[in-house]
Image (cartoon, rainbow, N blue to C red):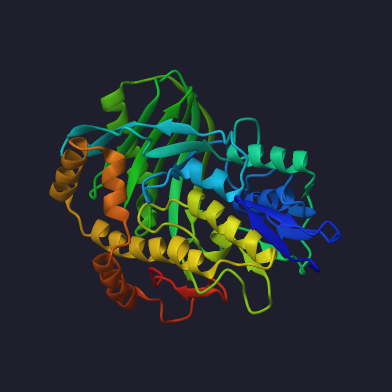
Length: 382
């Protein structure tokens, strides 16, 4: 077999005579996911992480593992791809939407419309769980170690900020709450969110344009949430920010032969800025590529098509006014929210056709900073 691998029932299996370790740069979700899948298939793996802990720029706050872009359940998809069961994820069946006109809408779904995962190092986080499973499987996690230039897999995170979020991580006695504010007067091209689950909370505002207004938007959005949910007590754990990277990749392997996963490849949803599911999906594809059987068809269907569709949906999102957002919130409140998300985000021919026109109009034509894999990116705000 000379280093090649076979795949059965979602698991990679390698020739045991192959002893060279696959080297991966970056200890976030994408890098750890790729390493874990390789290690579970019997391949020696080394993950190089510059920091002393996994999770990169995250500080234990809640992030979304979306479950509305595909009829297939996200956790079921990950288990089928070779991940062990038991991912620390909190299913969400209910949320509160606030609009810019004082409206409060409750949305529900029979199946989870999303799973919430804590990001960063430590017990209970997705990154920490992946690191534990990796080391249990025999993979090596090398902390405080810059990666050599010759790594086979690059998972070092965003190359450029295509979207920015200002976040506060806190603890609170607030009952479990998932709330989102859609008000273009406060967060044009974005939204504000309040997640508190099991006493651990995250509040933030996110934008892909006009990011200089984030501080003021956060103050207004916080008061809106406090008006609806009361002056609940809280204790701040961390104040900081996140940034998102989006560029549609031509492939996950560059001309030099290095594989790229997650945001290092630009893989991210452009509608809401959600990337965890796509990052882990890209990790499974790259693990197969390292094994010698990259699934080109799956890459196009499960990475490129939903990313392209999200460009068209982002165009529509940015053109909604307060009245339209109010109508959308009211419409969502009367239906199964997960089923609605799946219908809206399905990469239909009409959506992809519209997205092609939007990509032409929005394309960066002065040279991008996403790297050699970039097939398309939106022109920077200047």
